[in-house]
Length: 236
Image (cartoon, rainbow, N blue to C red; front, side, top):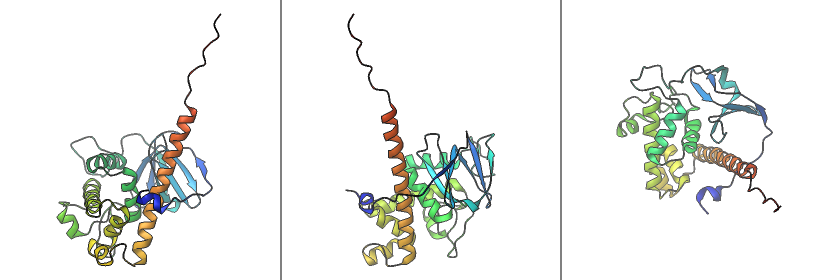
């Protein structure tokens, strides 16, 4: 059984579905916008489904959302005009996910834990952007502007990929190193004894597992609903 299987899954929470009935945009108080096809309220959280099949989603505290709007044009990831067609953040993550062979749900979970999807976030220690890159790390990864969503996610995902390879694809150690630094993981031969790091790793694994459970449930329901072969008609 893999590391995620050892961690187990989080179940529960009463859900109240709120259909978006097509492509909507959630406008956050921090100015960021998230395209989604469907949404539902789960206690104090709002879940935004990024695709019509409801297999990918992000969870946000409901009080972070200012309003919802109907999408009338592709949602750009920044206000800077780009020579190519603007991409939604979801499209950017999927493209970078394919490039580095990392599940987009994992990237979304890391972004959620790091910045709450705020591309202008700055931590007290100076980490910046969606995946909270420290200036030195950003420089090493070739990220000149950590506040640019595409560059930040590219750099953060590449760094996460390097950490996964460094720890033989042990997700727990890689996430701990992303939070506390590789030197601390090697010093303690595993997750360092810091409350913040333990909570960080648990939050990401729990959210990632929830997404995988949702995907399996949808796949199982699809298989169940698929029509089987029609019985042969009796010979006349």
